[in-house]
Image (cartoon, rainbow, N blue to C red):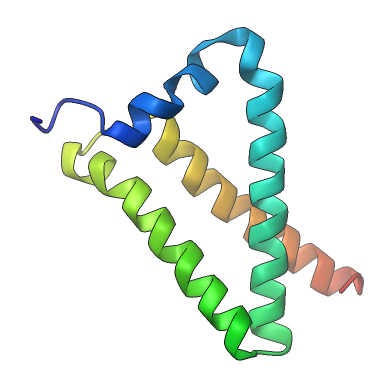
Length: 103
């Protein structure tokens, strides 16, 4: 595989981004990812337990593994933008929930 070719994960997830009929499914999956990131961040910050820290490390490593091909190409694809956007949205949701007293 040259650096210009998408990774296996990007090829597997490409239909979610390119087929307009699957965009609602993609939106729901990304929304679940954002909520999972927000809850995990709140759990790590508010009451760090072994499980919450382990889940945070695992989610971070999976995210880095998904971003690695885009970093090697120096050109972000749809997957990289989605992963980074999910982390940003999750952090903002965690901040808003903490400030609003929801968690």
